[in-house]
Structure formats: structure tokens, C-alpha cells
Length: 327
Image (tube, rainbow, N blue to C red; front, side, top):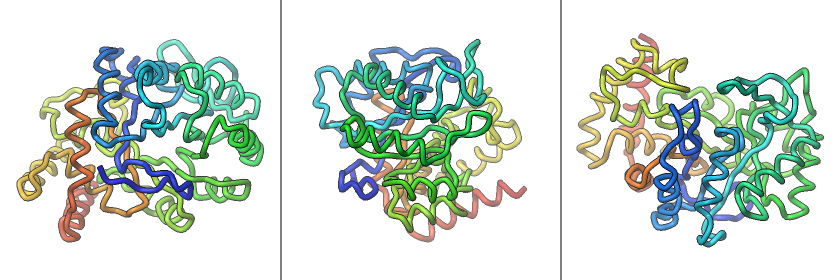
């Protein structure tokens, strides 16, 4: 597995990390996954050179963190670089986020909330520190907290050794500039796939300029770009309201993937490998998350980091995605 530096920390991270939203299960994923399969998937990561694991309390009300905590038992803590997040809560009020089942989630990045959240996360993870603490969603009215106050809390946790680095997800360039006024920001997480290239306009440039790692999530568009879904696939859970899972768009995407087959033969890889390799080809400061839920999936996906797409093939894949987006 190829590695890269995490922001300006000097810490080595694998180019591909394991994202554990799906492992957390719950309504968004059609129910809970088999626990032992999830644990085995996490424990396989170091053997494959994957040391970066991403989780969050908001992934099924802490279940993702709990599963990761169980997997870490008996493992070497230093073999893992763990990202978890703050800012999405259900035990205190905040600005309305979304509803999962009968439970309302809120956005809250106040100092008090962050202090409470880190302790709960550390307990669920069974560790005394996290490598990266990331704001999951940015603060909004009516419970708006200035980034200066949020960063004050994060810098205090960093000084105490409970977190080693700070990150931000779902943020704008304006947010990033504000974070940088008050301390170090080493990683920014944003949705990025060959079908969703919106962050290229402004988020990628500001990360490149400030030596911030850009971590792409949903690079396979919640499984669509895995190449494994049948033509008559019916979206479930979190997929249902997404652009590329609407019937007409899904068929266009599948036509595009059919046209990728000669590239799969050229690089001796899968459709998913191509989609992931395309992301990594966009810059050396880019990292990505694989939402694998089985050992076989993570074994397949890590091969993507070894594929060196030609400049011409990277451009052709971009053009094919642009064509179906403009029809």
C-alpha cells in the first residue's frame, strides 16, 4: 500500500483508508451487519497496509465506534490512525440535522458539546486518544458557534493529548480559512467521485495551497461505481434520494461503466478499482475512504492504490462522466 503524509503532521497514512459508516449499520444501511464480519474486516487492514480508519458517533448512534473499539482489542493501537468526529449529536439540542428512525440528530459544535463528545467517543473506542478529531458538519443557526470557539476546544484537547490532529468535513473554503486563523488543520473531508466533481472548483485548490490532506468520501457513490449492481437494482436506505440512484441517471452510469471495460482489461482491474484509481490520480495530497464491509471488499479495493492510470485515460474517464452529466 502506498502511503502519504497526513497534512503537516509528518505522520504516514495509507493512501486508502477504511470508512466505517456502512459497518455501523442501522436504518441508513438496511440494518446492522454481521458483527464478526465487520471486526474481521477492520483487523485485516494492517495486513494489507491500511492504517487509516474513519468513524463517527453519527454512524448509527455510536455503533460504528463501538465495533471499531471491539476490533481494536488485542491489536496494536499504533498500527492504526483513527479519525472520529464531533458536531452531530442526539443527546443534546442543536440545529436540526436529519432524522434516523425516530431519533432526531442535531448539529452542535459548542465547546461544551465537543468536551462531552470526545469522552464518549474515547469510551466507545476503548482508547485514550484519537489521531484525528474532525468536525463532522459545520455549525449553523440557530445554534451557531464561531469556528474560533470550536477551535479553542479542539486546541485544548490537542494540548491535553486526547487528540493528535484536527480535521474538518463538509466545509467550504471560507470555513477552512477561518480554521487556519486559529490553529493547524491537517485534513479536510469532502464528497468526491468521478460522478461528483464539485469540490474541484474550490476545495481542492485551497487544500493543495495549504498542504492539507483532502480525503474523498463516497468515491464509489455508495456502491454504484462498484460495478456490481444489476440493471434492475432498487436503491435502499441512504441511496434513495441521491442523484445518481435516480432510475434514468443510474442507467447512464451503468452505460458509462460498460464503456470502461476495455480499461479494466488494460489495467487488469475491476470497475471499482478504476473509479478509486481515478480519484488518487487527481493529486498526491488526496486520500480516499473505502466503505468496505467484508475482507474480500477491502482486499479488492486496496489494489486501486497500485494502479497508475495514464494521463490520457484519466482524461477520457472524466470526459465520459461529463457526457452523461450533461445529457
